[in-house]
Length: 386
Image 1 (cartoon, one colour):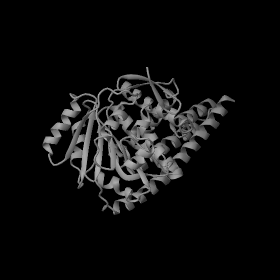
Image 2 (tube, rainbow, N blue to C red; image 1 turned 180 degrees about the horizontal axis):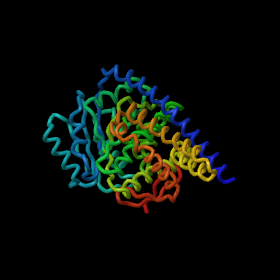
Image 3 (cartoon, rainbow, N blue to C red; image 1 turned 135 degrees about the vertical axis):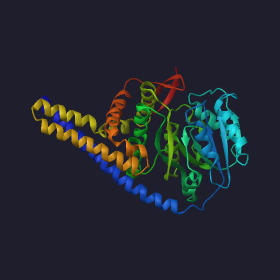
Image 4 (spheres, one colour; image 1 turned 90 degrees about the horizontal axis):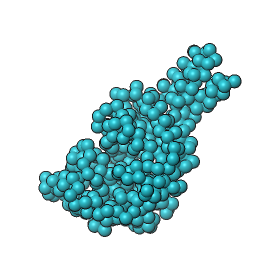
């Protein structure tokens, strides 16, 4: 009896994960079509302010920051902000300014944040120094191509567009755990975004790139409205959409540097992110448990073994493995052009199993670590410092 129940659960999970894959493939086709359309028109070039919060040295930080100095764009400024004047990342920004004196740069020392979300406090301080009405917020662990600003701003030619965001490919800094986390970004996360955009349109933004109009930001209460929340990127896009603006997924894909080399650091980071999703979007996060394939494939193998039907069990596991390999190739390579997703597609079934374990772990308590400090999450995504 137990084996039959296991078999039914395995078959049901493989069905839902296959539906998820088919939706991701449909989203990928739609994304590629829109990307060609958006890339064809690149003559809208308004002045832009780039807001760049930083916090100490990170792997690949020099090349990440330098990629913004190298933008092939006529009129833009970059504002860097950190808590302390002697922050090593600010020293690097000053060094790059000396190397590229033609780029307009401002340095802001935000001080210790009075709010749980230190990044949002830095954004408020930078906003006071911004010269332009079109704002591009970018995390420090992001590297971009020279046409990044040009492509990201194109949707704003439509006055109804209030926010633009970007998919990203994970770039590992070394080691198995960094590579697995990067595969999760390029495949698992990108698939979810493509499906959300396909089914209901973008109702959220992604932290590595959030571009918005000043008027849209002011309409939702400014950055200060997100002071107590962990998922400020999700809320910015969500509230801009609720205010009547369009949120657009750009055709431009950026590089997101995966900083975590050790298993512990990688797990802590990913569980924190999943917990923030659980508290910000509880129903969607709960349903995401049905999008994984490998746990159900292994359950099918176990049920087949108990029933003495090894062939059936092996077939169910093979379906799960094939499902994840196709997802890695179609999304990781076909959409975000991650060479590692092509080269290490064989690792993605392991990443899928790890993703399921992290999803389960996201339901273990409400506490998270962020920037060396402890917080408790509350419903709606609010953070309370412990």
